[in-house]
Length: 227
Image (cartoon, rainbow, N blue to C red; front, side):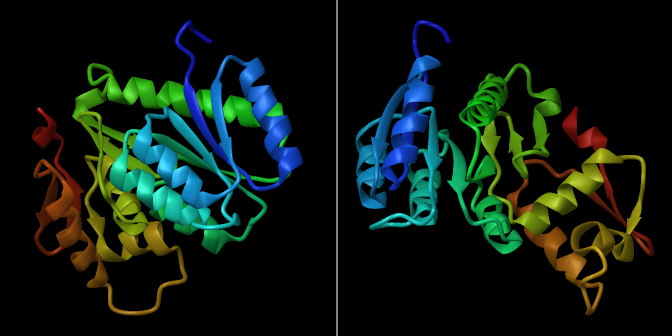
């Protein structure tokens, strides 16, 4: 670590886990503030600045998701890792829909957690640097988010997946059916016009007009919009 250590907010209600992981973080050069209640975490967010928050979900007071939502509203530049024993897909999707940067399932090796923290902080620093943001638009596949000129776009998971699909293949025109397969796999049953609704919402949230309608076919990413 450098001479100005990263500030970490660590929310964990199990004393042994909290003490062990906090000690590993401190030995790695992080400045760590540990709490066991979600409402205490929210108060700390309001009164200070943290580079990253590591949040358990099932804690007393406000739960980890409430703390995550508060961080995204009050201090959106703070990176967030959800650290929890909940390993079901629905909970993980909920975390990413609420713009968590990573989701780590307990029990976890302290070394692995530190590596995940290091990766998130390095990526966040790069993205917020502005000059390193290719074309001003960054698709962060690990964190399931998109950023434009260093600012996170408030996309739902479906909107993110739609943008990622189009962005990765700008020369390809996708039909609605192909986009449905990329977003919902084969689980979706219904009218393919749902893609039109997602495109409409996505266009409202994008700061540039980069999604073209190809009449009679579908949609395409317009790379010219990035120039």
